[in-house]
Amino acid sequence: MNQGKLVFAQLMQHLPLTTFRRCVGRYRGEHKVQSFSCLDQFLCMAFAQLTFRESLRDIEACLRAQHTKLYHLGIRSRVARNTLANANAMRDWRIYADFAQSLIGIARPLYVDEPFGVDLKDTVYALDATTIDLCLSVFPWAPFQSTKAAVKLHTLLDLRGNIPAFIHISNGKMHEVSILDQLVPEPGAFYIMDRGFLDFGRLYRFHQAGSFFVTRAKSNTKAQRRYSHRVDRSTGLICDQTIFLTGVYSPQDYEAPLRRIRFKDPDTAKTLIFLTNNFVLPAFTITELYRCRWQVELFFKWIKQHLRIKAFFGTSENAVKSQIWIAVSVYVLVAIVRKRLKLSASLYQILQILSLTMFERMPLDQLLAQTITDEIATNSDKQLFLFE
Image 1: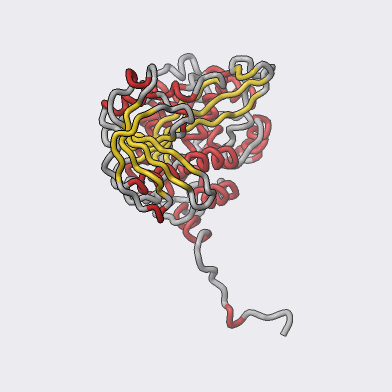
Image 2: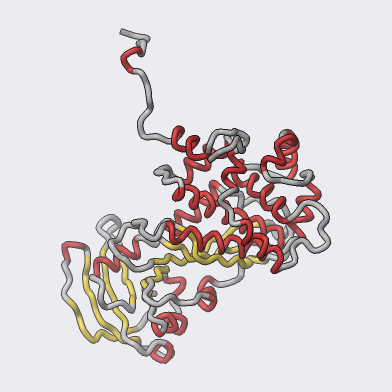
């Protein structure tokens, strides 16, 4: 029950603070720290994400204007931009990476029954990467091109609830397909990826682990047809074939048969060729699974628009990674609160409301339930009309 706590404090009550302290102790985050703890740093950065702050000076000005309420926010130290900048540069970013993973572990079971567009009980992941452009002279540790720097967010998105199950932050030069080496295949799960991840040697590891993948074939993929299955051409399917790879290296990298599905998209009239190691699902379901891969693109677009991961408060590698992982933590935390409070509103609506009510004392469930509604309570019988 709410006891007059601020909305920000009520939101942070859903954080597993015991787990956070374990993460801090694992990397000695508060070694020789006398004030401004890692939790203070996390809360300040989370406040910046939720209220769309633009800089350290902006964070300092807003929090100092409410200095009498800092204790009630959970912040136990005085907020200064130099202190926050030093904390972002020096505190190990792996503290916040591990904590974000623990929040993901809490959020995913809450969305286990969430529909995603295909009637399938198995876990379905979409794998992709997005690039965040940086200035090479300011961020020399993240080379990308001769005149540009960048970081890449390699993301494995659980399509049930759009919760990122795995995130890896690298410089811009790391190729997307290399992230397959860091993934632990989950038996029975589906991995949806575009043709940039087409590496038969790496995909064979997923096949041996009992995982399924759906990807697109490249124009130079050589294969021999062994069997053709019947298809319903009215759905846009052209053929459904069992194939074996041919060529110089492909048969050595992937010895098992593959399934090749040719599909003509009725909306764009474009012909697509899909490769998968699943021979059980209907061919049209495979095409629908690949269509759901677009959700990871929408996820990247959403976090770039509504979280602070394009403009950074620090220039060091540690500061950038800390800010990104805290942003991910805030995203997952709001998703957890949305499910625990049984809200039907989108994350966007919740974030917009929270951004204006951080210092309010209304109970969080009442605030979101009263503000977000499908019906506007108006007394229409007493409404006056300007023109009659």
